[in-house]
Image 1 (cartoon, one colour):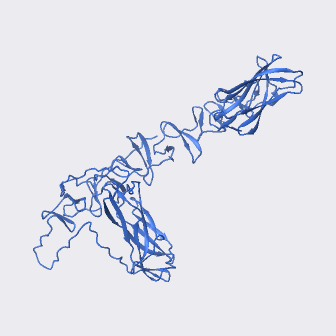
Image 2 (tube, rainbow, N blue to C red; image 1 turned 45 degrees about the vertical axis):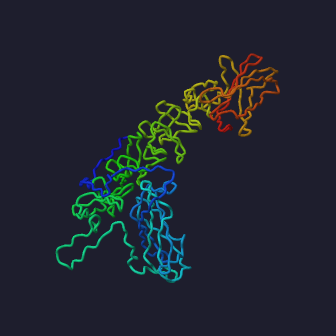
Length: 559
């Protein structure tokens, strides 16, 4: 694999630095908190406003509802400490005047995540049973969402502008301006004094606290400093103009739209076109994982790119959505279930129903051998098929198990002990094959070995999955009765190792040229096998033969 380069850039906005820290509570900033428990009990609430906008569609038979909110912690848990990486927001239809709930479970709902705070819901709602009048949709969260760091429960509530239903249809908004919410108590603002009176400008009455967007300490406006507000339990950065900054960086820290320093949450910075994760201490995470997402050295979330993690000693591929790929290919490279790039190992891809071998460099092997197995040009392991290897100048047959066949027949072709197909030669069992490797039937007379062995004919008859019959026949009918003592063995076709073996004696006569035996596979491991028989008769002759190769799987005979 070519080296994956990770570009390292710095945040252009991180120029102000941490000028000074003001802790009005007397507590040092940026301490890390860790919560480990089987369950979490919320100790307080944090309210989030959910905005809903309505547009009629389908000739006003329905409405399109767009949901939006300020922020979502991707590490939310419920009160049983189960991960909740999204919030489920539901709606109910409410009479704007009487407050009667007319539809509770049939309204729009949407899953909002930290990287998608705005999402639409398009539905055709039936207003057939709804009287004409003025209505609104109320949004509410459908579960408990708790920040494990602060143990605060986060509530997501809101309501749509008031709209009319007339003649069973959506008849538009009552006014273009949504109903005014009560102002949040998050950033108290004091109205500037009216300017009817001439100078001098009145001195703010606040000694320590907020006056509009400015913060005072002992009656003095704070400038170019960090402040910690005990009431809001958050850090703020006050710029050189004396106002808290919003949607911007100060050093490694991010100030949200409400001025609060982001902690233990995801933010999206439009200027840099990237997601960032702000740790429990408040600075942006770098060179680390947050769930399935990776934050690079510049704090940006990796997307559509390779990264190398030194801690895990592996490459990972981050998808266009940002999470690490798993059980999937990226080009010639395979990402395992844990996201790591496979190297020097076999993988099985259920989509392609094949084994692949990933080299030490990471790409899949092709047109090559790995042990007794052959990887084709598409990287798939060859099974139940012929291949031609240019390097060895020979045909090979790969069994249904995947290893190459050896010392056996496949149809009219013989595979030698090294797996190569025999060509223009006589096989060990005495048959001649031509230049293409095919058995020459015109020369079917078996050539006896130096021991003058007589070739037996062995045929298999499948009875059921657990048993097969074996017919063993002499090459010709005997002229008189005589006995032959046999050794009968089940042999592994790949290794030549004897699996089972038995001895028996058969008495032949002019009316008995062949006999039949049977074999059960209840104790036979999965693999490729053949039957081999050798015998010595009263007449001094040697008898031998072997069956075709067959497979056994789950103690069952496989053709």
